[in-house]
Structure formats: structure tokens, C-alpha cells
Image 1 (cartoon, rainbow, N blue to C red):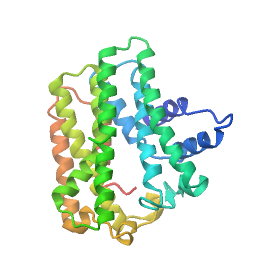
Image 2: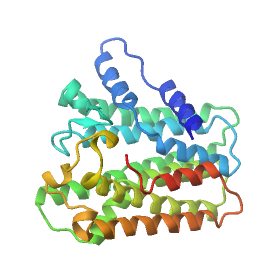
Image 3: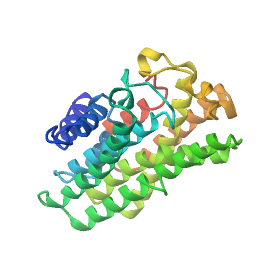
Length: 292
């Protein structure tokens, strides 16, 4: 896993902008937000799923970089005062604290555009299957936008602004879209580019949604009982912002139980495949019961 993360880091950095010319400040803010760290879970999930289905080639690389760019743009905007108003991310000052709110907004915008510019470079890689690339690109747009991450984030913000009580069904929708959608995109794109069957892609989608939702529930749990040094940001921000989370609706013990059951179901589905990838299984298991 360490080796795969190093590979992912190299690929991501290869597609980041040069800090030169008049827009050098926004390029610097983009690079700061991406290089500030992170586990690179999404590109690694994509890469390992690609390998699981026999993928072998450079076509996966632009998509690995693009999914991390989409993820990081969402974090830059999520940290803004208008959203979660967080001063720390991954143990370092957030982008808007360093560069100002306006530049942080533009850095997020720039990352989203750069993500699709980068993904399109997959068409130029050796041996690229254009039909698969088109399908992967469409999925990236769908899971990043209103039908995915943005839609989930919008429901979350709407609930906070209106100070309305949401039930577990709406919260699950938020988790499945706000976090689960990019996890889905990561694994499904890996399968698509490797030439997996529609049935296999559908099963990967189900696994990824379970993993992504459990991952977000774990995030809610960590905000209550996590170690600030390990998670790299302040604990208790959800409570301070009067935010409704899985923990506030179902309680800490029930939240842990649900996250564990989702992860166990995901592993059960994963083990039903004829082919396996132990690194992928290891990563899925590590996403439950995490401390950071």
C-alpha cells in the first residue's frame, strides 16, 4: 500500500500546474491544497480495481490524478467560512487561511476544471480504448456533479441553512452522495478502463457505495471521539456548528455498528468475485475503524 501511495503521489504531482506567470498565485494555492497531504484513497482504489480486472497501461493515470483533483477541490470549498469554516486540514492551515477566501474559491474552481482537462489526456495514452475512456469520463462528471458529490453537499448545506431536522433517510442520501459518489467513481472507473463486464461494474458500484457511506459515518464518529493529532483537524466542529450527523441521529454505538455492518457486507460482495486483489481488500478493511 505504501508503494501504491507513492506511485499515486508521483502521478498526481505530474499533472499539477506550474507556478509561473500572472496566475502563479492561484497555481500555488492549487498545489498547496493538493500537496498538503492525504491518504490518496480514491486514486489508490481506482488503481487497485483497475489491476484487479487485469488493467495494464497508462490510461488509468490521468483519471487517478483527476479524481484526486475533484476530491481536493471539494475540500477547499468545504473548508470555507460559508461552509464548515475549518482552519486546519490534514494538520496544516487550510487554503483559505493561507491564501484568502477569494483565492481559495478560485483554487477550487481551477482544480475542478483541471480535473477534466487531465482526464481527457487519457485519450492520448498508448493503447487507450476510446469507448472506455468516454464511459469513464461521463461517470466522473455524473459522480462529481448534481447527481453525486455536489448534490449531496447541497442537501447538507440546505439542511444547515434552513436549520431543518433531517431523518436518517435524508442523511444517508447525503452520505451516499457527498462521500460515497467519489468512492464509487474511483472503483467503477478502474473497472471500466480495465474492461470489466457490466455485471462486474455494477457489483463494484455496490461495494463502493457501502464503503463510501461507512467511510463518512466513520468521519462523523471521529469528529466526536477522534484524536486531533491523528485526524489533523479540530474535533467537535460538527457539534459547534449544530450539524446533524449519523452520530447525533443514531448515537455513537449504533453508528459504529452500522459502519461495521456496511463494511462487512462490502467485503462479502468483494469476496464473491473470481479474481481478487489483496491490496484492494486491505484498503477497504482499513477504511473501517480508522483513526485518521
